[in-house]
Length: 450
Image 1 (cartoon, rainbow, N blue to C red):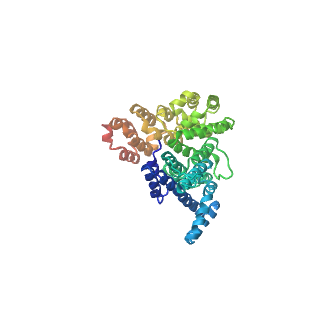
Image 2: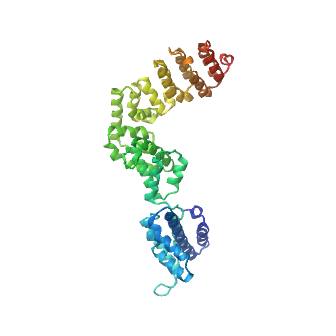
Image 3: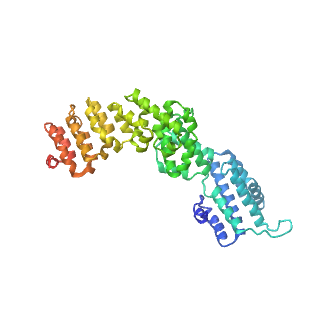
C-alpha cells in the first residue's frame, strides 16, 4: 500500500501542502467527495505554479497559460472565473507539452478532473441520481495526483537531460555526488530520471564524440562514469538497465573503446552484469594479447589492467594477472596508481629493486609505494625499507621527504615498525640536513633505535 501521508509530506510546493493535506484529511475522515474535489484543485494550482516557473526560465509553451492567469488576476471576478474555467479545460494539454506530465499521467489526471465535476455537480447524471464516489476512488485519485505531479519539481524530461549534460561538460565541473544525485536524480520525474541515467551510460560506456561536447570524449566519459556510480548507489537496477542498452554497440566498437570501457566501468556491478560471455571472452583475449605484445607502458589500457586488483575480475579475466606480471616496473607503477589496493603490496619491494635512476625512483614512490603504504603489513614494510635502503640510488639521501611520508602512512603498524627505521637513519647520519629532516618527521634516533 502506498503511504499517502508520507507522500503528502513530500509535496514539492510548500504553499500547496496545506491544501493537499486537507484533501488527505477528507479521505481519512471518510469524505470521498471532498477529497476528490480538493485533489483536483491542488493539481490545477500545482501545474499553474510550475508553468509560471518554467515561463520565467524561458519556456515558450508556458507563455499563453501564464498570460491567461495574469489576465484573470487583473480582472473583476465576473470576468476572471470564465478565464480560469477556460484555462482549466486545456491545462492538462499544456502540462503535457511542457513535459510536466506524460500521456499516461494525463489520462490519470483527466479521470480526476471528470470525477471532480461529478462530485461538484452530483445531479448532472441522466436520471438525476446523486453521484456518490467511493473511498477507493478518492484514495486512488489522491495517490495518482501525488505520483504524477504533486511530489515532483518543475523538471522537464528533455530539458533536465540538457541541463545534466551542460553540468558535466562545464570546464569547472566538480564531482559532488550529493549535489549530483539531489539535482538530477532525486528531484526529477521517474521518466526524466531514466533519460538522465541513459545519457550517462551512453557516454560512459561508448565515449561518443559529440560536436556539442567541447571536451575530449574520453574525459567526458570518465566524468559520466563517476555520475553513473552515484546513480547506481540510488538505484542499481535502473543503472543496470541503462548500461545493458549500450552493450550491442560496445560489442562492435573499436578495441580501444572496449578496453577503455572495461577500465572505466569494469568494477561497476551494473557494467559487468550486462556483459555477455562472448564479450567477456573477447576482452580477456585482448588483454592477453596486450600483455604479450606490449610489456611496456600503455596508457590506453592502464585502467583496464588495474582491474587486476579485484578478486572477482581476476577469476573472470585471468589474463589480467598475466598481463600485469609481464609489465616493466614503470607501467606497473602506473597501474597501481590507478587503483591502489592491498593486492599490490607484495609487488612493491620488487619495484624498488628494479629502479635504475633517481627520477624513476621518485616515480615509483609517488605512483606505487606511497599510495599503497596504508595497506602494508609489518613484514611488507620491512621488505620495502630494505630495498629502499639497499638500492644503489641512496634513497635516504635522495628522497627524505618521501621517507617521512612513508613513515606517516604506515603509522597504523604502531611501535612495532620503529626498529625498522634504524638502518635508514644510520645510512643518512653523515648528512646533517637529511638526518635532521628524517628525525624531525620520524622521531628522535633514540626513539627509533629502541
